[in-house]
Length: 216
Ligand SMILES: C[S@@+](CC[C@H](N)C(=O)[O-])C[C@H]1O[C@@H](n2cnc3c(N)ncnc32)[C@H](O)[C@@H]1O
Image (cartoon, rainbow, N blue to C red; front, side, top):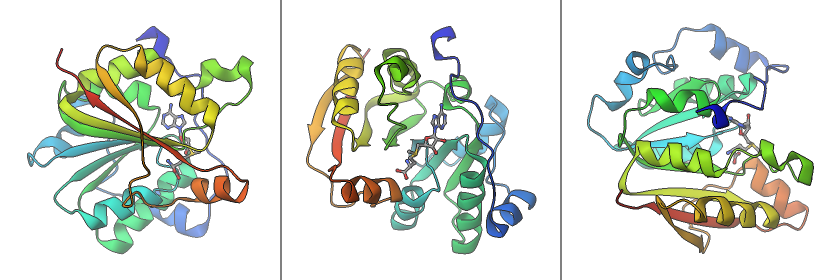
């Protein structure tokens, strides 16, 4: 897993009163990133989707409310955003969203092989400068590590508003034997998040990509 070691530090940042109150309250939905800690996510036998880098959780909340029979395991390392999602879980009474506060590359080993029905990575940090491309989350090593946790036939949905990042995704995931897919039309049910709105305002349309987990 060395190649997957974090290059992004835990991001703490200022918090609103709503975020802080949610962070201070004990929550059964905030899980420790260990095999035992994550066990409650998989105990029901319901499908589980991993949301990688959920931001404030806008998309997570919309998907979770639309389909209560699918569980979402949401991972991010931005503490104010963790507060936002925990607050939304409480306010909406969601019982199908579980949160990990941490780097997904450190959390992956605690997820059992083949336990995920699919994954989503929406608007990953673009790191547009060439010298920073190695900091991009989606790399071949990450694609391979994620593939081990996703069941055969499961999907990995990615969206980005950076054309160069879309090409990067095609190169990195395209080089993995575990995934097959590419660009798709924007699914009508994908919630619009702040990052997509920001891209649209700057003249950048979102690009959606969908990859299926191949048989090993
Ligand atoms: C640009 S935001 C997009 C948020 C959200 N997906 C959306 O569409 O609104 C990218 C998010 O990825 C998170 N992130 C970046 N690297 C990460 C990592 N290694 N593990 C977990 N989260 C990460 C950041 O903290 C940030 O919240």
